[in-house]
Length: 294
Length: 286
Image 1 (cartoon, chains in turn green, orange):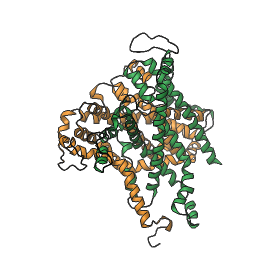
Image 2 (tube, chains in turn blue, purple):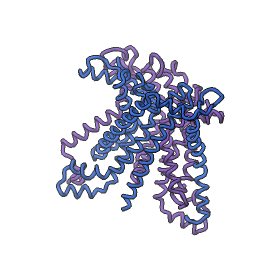
Image 3 (cartoon, chains in turn cyan, yellow):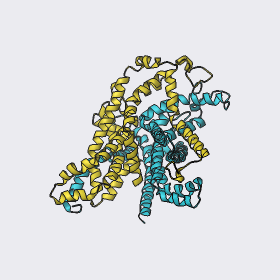
Image 4 (cartoon, helix red, strand yellow):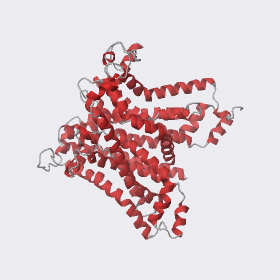
């Protein structure tokens, strides 16, 4: 029943609505971005073809800094998410009383609207009266209040930390699932041979969750690269542009200054990077699944 | 041995200590903004803006929960908008994704691999990258400043994950079931409606929940850019106006946030079991 011509037609009919929707809402805007990037589109009614001017403008500025900053931001955020996520997953996998409750308590940052969580962090980073500055003063690590979002370096770190916080629940949950899918007899065999808990983690758990870690890193990389809400709400790319990533830069240009054409050119640059990530993502996925088949 | 637990899962006392300390740190990181946010909502502003920092609200009260309605008169409306937008988006996603996931799970047709890849590739774009053309699209369709401007673009970005989760679930339903019905002369649509959908109901529920949360948690940028009418604003954007003020009334902002997320948190408490089980099941398959 699954290979006849009528089956193929039926399958296409089933796929048609979703495909049309994606073509209309994702594929067409994508093409439109490329077209717009060669025009001077703005609030004005007339749109002129300007060739490579927008791209020349971008590279005339400090775009290279923005790209590097975006990569550094993404690298630290994804790295921390994976490290904290792995620790969390191992802890949540331990057979101790309260485990089920702990698992549920991991999820709130993922469930509440991102912006609400970010407001709460906005308070935590508050200089005069916020929690982080306050507690660090109380224990004597800081001798005066520190407004985390007011300085480039600390704002950069603060936005990363908030991004990690939002990403950790899902990463932890997926890695926990990966750990649970490891056959128990592997651990029992190692245990019978006298392998300690840490040794078993290093030699069994870690190697076997590498595929899940790689998959999650790739997905997380793409999401983090696209991250908008956190930086926009906390710093709007400031202070002094020091938390301006490519997405924030594009938004400021296009929506803030109504330079649609130039903004589109910046969006095209993001798309180029994203397609490279995507290429690697699919390669890694197919490698992992063919490795499993062997 | 007497505890009935295999020796391998027994911990020594110091291992228990290490696990609980680790758990305390981990959950501390995850939950501290909520704890601090809640305590802030109990503190009077004068206490809030005083040094040195005190964690515990000695003179705490629920005053902010009553006074906030003056500053955020539309809070009820925002909560309703958030739920409405997420619900409509979830319904739209299910209508599009259930047939598509079934096609990917059950039929071998030319180009199925690349097409699935193309759907998943949508995941790599966020709304932010395509914001400019989407804005133009919404404008030319006359949808700016309506609920649809916040629903229509959001749905597209929820489709890939939903297809992936549901396809994984459908792959685990034995083919023999629909094949037997086929041999008995049942039509394809009949098989989908009467055999596959009822069996897949738990999977569809999980996908619906995950989609709802996705739509609920991430409704910011479209709502911020495509809508400027306060009566249509979802919670996040409605409160953002409050957050962006020169002098933020923190205790009321936190109180409004907690009241705002309460409906979904209560729902989550009842449904968390399905969610955790369903999402982790989808992950293992990868």
